Structures are given as structure tokens and as C-alpha cells.
Length: 206
Image (cartoon, one colour):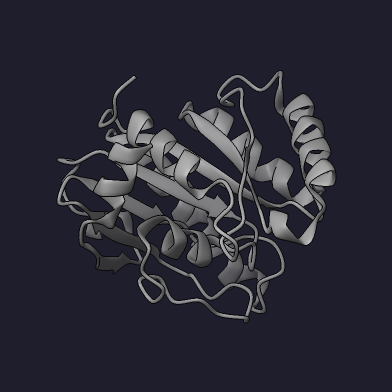
């Protein structure tokens, strides 16, 4: 975890936002992506991982992320923030447009090492998450569920939610067999997730 802390303490920067997969940079660096329902805390988690409070823009308005936003960490790893899904305050056709962008990204990136699917620890997996899980299984990219906002629950409740979530995804072919429990506000689980990200990207020590 110390190596991961050092790596994520090095400069991280916003690279670009892509509205079409043709705008993505060459697949010459490992990438990990972050997906989840609108307002689940993706931007906050990215900021917590990198220790930069304003790297990813945090908004209280659901559906703010409508592009694939790419960030460069330590000059050797890219983080991709995918468009949220669920209750975005846009038209159905517009929502489908940027959700399809996320799916296109999954298909287009041979350098994508893992997807982190963020789930609000207070609510657990919802029906709307099933479509995302199906898309991830179809893409055959390894993905791991990350519970966010765990500080809103008592530790025992958060652990129970993690166990419940793991049981629900246990038969899914591309699901990583561990659920991460995090709090961007309190820093809980962030050092462990940094280490897992580097390992998944092939940049850590196994």
C-alpha cells in the first residue's frame, strides 16, 4: 500500500473528455475505469484516490458526466470516469446517448484492465445496476464492485452490505471476488483500493 500511496501522490492531471470513442488517445497505457449510477460519488472517489480535491469536478446534479473523462496518474496510468446511469435529469434519448458511449468505451479499449462499479453502500445493488452488470459481463472485462459513502453506515452494516453484494454477484463471470468498502469523505478503504488499482493495472507488486 505504501508503493500505491507514493504513486498516487505523484502528479495527476485531467487529460481530456471524449464524446466519441474516436477521440480517445492511443491505447498505449493501462487504463482502469469507474462506472456507476448518477450521483454515486465517482468524482469524489477519483479525488480521494489521487489526493486532489478538484481533479474531477463534483456536482450535486445527477448525470453531470456525459463524456468519458480521462485522467493521467504518475505518467503511467489512466483513469477513466464513465458517464453515469440511472436518474440523470436529461431526456431519455440523451441519457441513452451517453450511456451507449460508456458501452462503446468498454468495447474499444484493449488496454482496459479493470472497471470499478460504484454502488452507494446505503442502498446496495438496485435493478438499474443489473443492466450495467450485464454490459460488463458481455464486455468480458474484469470488474470490481466498490461500495461508496460507507461512512453513512455503521461498520457492521457496511460489512453486511458488502457480504450481501458479493453474494449477489458471485455467479457473474467477470466479477472480481471481493467487494471494496470505501468512504471518500473519511478516507476509509482508499489506501487498499489504490493498491488494488495498481495491481489490476499490472503496475503493483503481487
